[in-house]
Length: 173
Ligand SMILES: [Zn+2]
Image 1 (cartoon, rainbow, N blue to C red):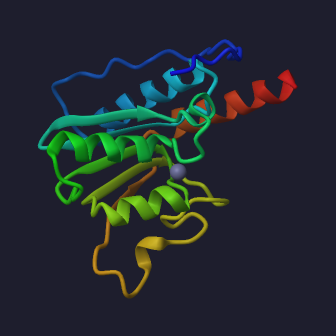
Image 2: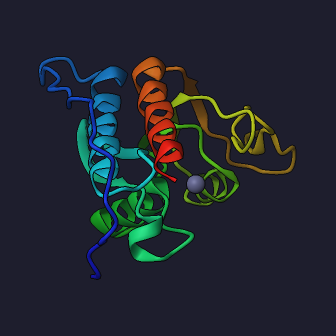
């Protein structure tokens, strides 16, 4: 893979080291948050995702759109591919996907197509979010699979991270 030669602005945020004892939504979202910090460090928009199945993390990814030169390399798409590979089945109907920002049209569609059981996201996106922020793909009346949605988990730190990144990038230009 081609290494990015672009310079990431220094990241003022620290990773969180969650207690392993309580594997709740906040626990998995903290892992996704840490992946978002990894994205920042390679100068990618800081969005991270993990997929949980049976209490285990079977996929973890961050946005890699710029470094891979691939418009589909969103954290969620990469995580869905990893998860399907890990279990040897494209149907992820017992899995929960955690992502630091509300999924875009492409990722929301991929979640429906992979029949993920549950999606937990942090920051709502009124512009491009397709699980209730801008529109709700999950509410398509003819679709026979519906996602269980939980929103707002750890939204403050995930939003702070995104806003700080964009602010620094703007002053960069
Ligand atoms: Zn996306």
